[in-house]
Length: 282
Image (tube, rainbow, N blue to C red; front, side):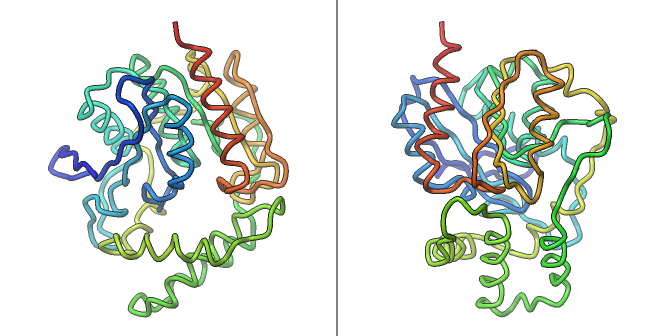
């Protein structure tokens, strides 16, 4: 692990592969640390000739954490964190792979600092500053689950693990049986390296500082959208909206997949990303 110092905060990072290969920065979604990117996924990308970097957002994992409810940063600051990671690794331009909020951040960077984005790969994401008819969002079942946060006993490690595992179950599609044992092992890893689990939900109150309305339409770098057909958090209409507003963007729909990177789909997703990146190399 490598720690990046940036504006009085620390960002925990990890790299996979050969630094001489095309760089890929993985930007995870809200409340999720770098472990949201499965180890096998990072290894698969590196094995396909990519230099992969993942990192903990602030308030997750081993990055700087503030007490619950005391976060004062905006989404733009998370975008600045991603740039700081690139700078620390000496990378001028990278392929930005964003999932969920991470995809929103990747689009933000492609608009505000286009020179840093070689391309975008947007997984389970929504369009930056959507300006069309209302798009479907989080399922009622997931909202109901998160509604129990207020009564969760954060001193009860078992209860915390159960809550996080159930969150992943609700995100999963029907393409493969939900592997509770595997997910519980990952959740235990997340918990063991997180200073304050309640603080990761600071992301739930995040807002943008600027008006980004319609600005995803300004993106001109190559864009690959990968979206689960059964996504209960950002339904597939969100992925289609991105593609409809960015010239040349392409969409891959993953059958039986929710708001997740299923183990069974890792080789396929890694192949698509590697082919996309390699097609842009000169």
